[in-house]
Image (cartoon, rainbow, N blue to C red):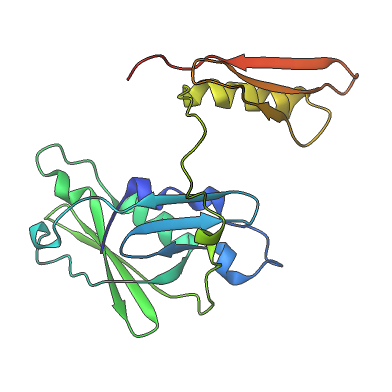
Length: 196
């Protein structure tokens, strides 16, 4: 299969705690997506819509389903070079060999290969918790604004959480509430993006 940086740069969502199951300390690669979770947050990124026949022959690949250690994913992501002339080269191919995987990338002059053993555990049935019903409403917001609010709560919030309040239409602001260490009330709004 073929994966790009968007598929690989999800390692922060995996667990870094050595006492957690090994499956949670890796990235789950399938032919449809890459997935990472620490059991508190989860991210799934679909694979790019690229024909594997367009890859250079020095990037062998086959269908995969397995859990790859975080360090191997990070190395493979670092190996991807920007290539405006041949964007197909901004990907890695995956090749399973027994209980190991090879993540290949190239700039056509050199080939980088990251080989590692797959984590031999069953990945959690994450699709069981993914919502499948149609949402009541959808609000589009600028992710940088959400990050700014989260950073503020990390710095000044008294608790290890903030409350997100959604109101009854797609034009309403998203409100985040909480308390400071001194007991002050925090209310932050992120306005939705209007239009497409």
